[in-house]
Length: 546
Figure 1 (cartoon, rainbow, N blue to C red):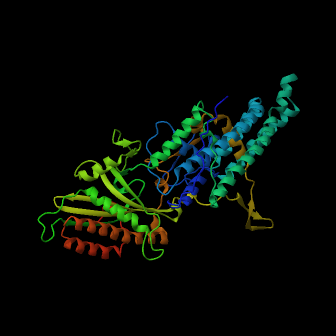
Figure 2: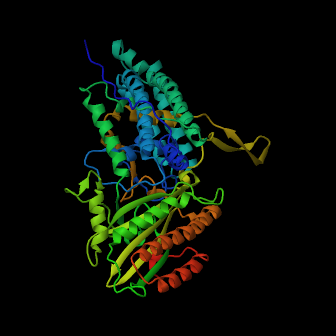
Figure 3: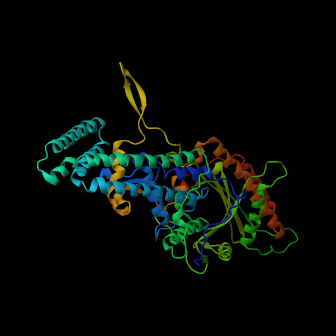
């Protein structure tokens, strides 16, 4: 009797302890299904279009995006990723895998059509493809020139087809072959068009559902092993699991004026720095370490969601301890430490505590305590970072604000019908919009030409080009815009800074009082900062242009 292996995740219980982050996730997922032309204007900021050798093999936006994301996130030996806060990267990658599977299924059918109607009648197929290659080459340059040249080319090819059909130069079998050599590829085009239409509608349905806010879960059977011998599916499942584990890392990188990668630039900073003096009647301040202060502040920040006034608590504060490494502003690769202090992509808690207590000055990574708010369903991610340092009887508590805004507009909106403006009959000075078919002849030929090379993606990249992702790459921060152009998102960032700063100061005051510290100067400085933060406004802190 054979043993059945169940690799399913089992019953899933919705979590209510984490904020919604569906908006950005769904928008990024739509990138896998988009069918726009791949041009410099159609890609998001940061991505660059890598041109190919032959325009007929060019990918569209969805194909290039899917290929680039899968290659960057799941390939063997890839570089580390920037954490994607406010986003579920697993859903984005799995939607890319699903879109890739749908296209591969379509390409298998198209390959059969190409073998029967194209390869067996290769001379005629090459002549028709030459015409479409000329159209593809001329399309970006001049629409009128493209139409005129392609009309002449198709007229010449059509004349050849009629000549071979009526007056074949040879008889017998080869005469019959020449008669149908130019006609069978047309039959192949008809069959390919039906296959492409069905696939295009499937992709657009998923795109429309995601853009409409529906919870559309991807189907990735290739990541579910059928048994212990299914090594390919097990490797894909392990890669996705590794991607999720990497997103939970507590290692971040500070890249100069770019700020903390994954969190954005600093837009505000408030510093409380005073001398540690014993209070009256006490000879010496009780000894303490920076981790003791940070832990006390973390406890107070976790209480931000509760308040005596109804509905005045801040929902879902996410409090984390991070270790931040410096990296050059122009660095194109990140590195994480390895060794016994690491547990996979995370540094062990005892080592994080050690870094906090070591009070690094002039060397090494540094400890940050962060409280993060994922708002507007992930469209806005506000993070306030707290550092605690003590240098020669001076305690410094610094709070900095970081913000991520909505993603690039390329990922917004659902599918639209293809239209073209034409002149009205009898009133040529006026125009009207006419709806075009979902696929035109050029698109069908492009898909049919690419289909046989699907199993060789590197060859397709060389022939048709693709997308190059910016480095260091993160599924959220790469395409993030500023929140300051959105009135309410900006207001939320400015408002949340005040209660966070006061919670930090209250926790620090309570702790220092227990350590017999004179709080006179701390209270005065905290009061001044409390008044200052009420008029907080975003500034270019990391630019150092003051």
